[in-house]
Length: 163
Image 1: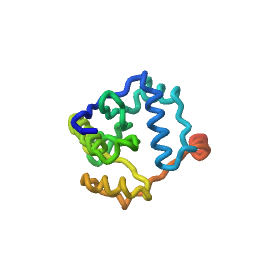
Image 2 (image 1 turned 180 degrees about the vertical axis):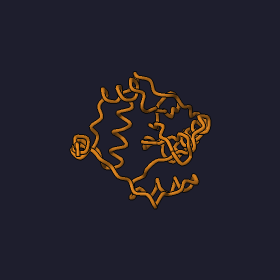
Image 3 (image 1 turned 120 degrees about the vertical axis):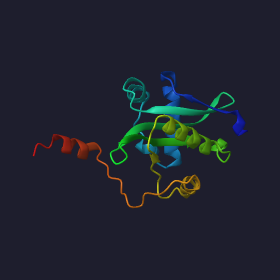
């Protein structure tokens, strides 16, 4: 498993089932399998028809061994877009060989080529191996920020609130 054999390719619509497999693999790693409600149909619609996200595969010897799913966000303070990395996953048997770092290198290249001001993501607090990896890349923890989220009924209720 030499990193020299690594290539990248963007996902195509025919890869929708493979994208879902990687999402499920990530969910299993994060002990969140029951939270995955994504389907091939939803992924096809949102990634390929509505084009709200992009998927980059890491490929070794013609086999997809990892993926990154990301989309553009916008920083009003920077006055430019950024890349938000939603998911990064390397198949377990390919970890520890530099492929994760290579994906970050590629994403950083994409961000710079597109004129983006930053590349950002979230990480579960218990995932110390990933935290250590991100810090080794020079990433900074944003400890002064707390993530808030509206989903499900709370999202529907606030959308319907006329007051």
